[in-house]
Length: 323
Image (cartoon, rainbow, N blue to C red; front, side):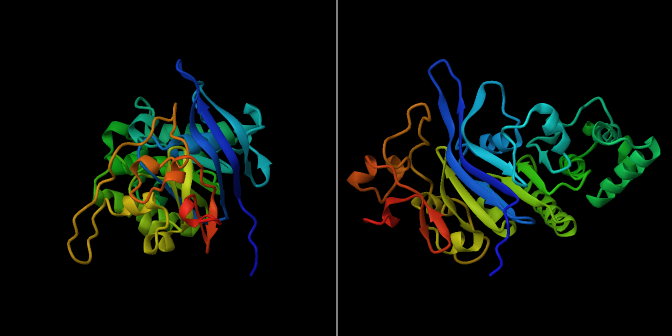
């Protein structure tokens, strides 16, 4: 079997927010990699650290947030050690970011065309006519009529605004596109349409995608691998179909039981009792133990390591060597 060198390597990444009450560890020793052309989804409840993980990888953390450990490498280059000038060289060219809310991410007082051309001008010297032609071709690529280059963001539908953001992210055909819940503001029909568009663009261009969402059903159809996060940690990571066929962590099982299927017999949806833990004072042992139906006494004391089970990584004592 031929080994493919990872495009993105995240190793032991730890991120903390500074608060008046003390540091809050939002991402806790997370390791993850992507190969070229791969689509990896990250799922979990609100507040589990998904978006913070993405922003740390993209070097877009707020001033109150710091990476306190670990490394992020793209094409073998250390992103965390780069200064702003070096980052500007590779942003948009090697990797780009699609934000959660396009209405907030796009400038409301500039036309879509002006924003695309500004992005091009910031990274490449190009005649105005060529920049306009590039912008028009990008809009066609994401299914928008180039007439909308003259439109302002408020004149576009939610789905069109998100596709305009994706067009902006693909200006220089980067190897990695990082997406933070780009479908969250859309209805289910628009969500599926946008996801099909993203997958087709991925097939054409060949970029790898790191995609954060809280919607398990969405990534079930579109991601190659799936990372499940809980309380700042990855609790399960593996092939998407395998995770849906045989979820190993109790939290993954609970997430899958909490959304309806459009096929098969009707089943009562199961919520997850309790609430995610306070990351200022996370519980000892397994972080899911206060909500876990399979908890045993030692799970409340000992923290489980990530264990390899087949091709899946799972952070659960039930798969430990001594259980």
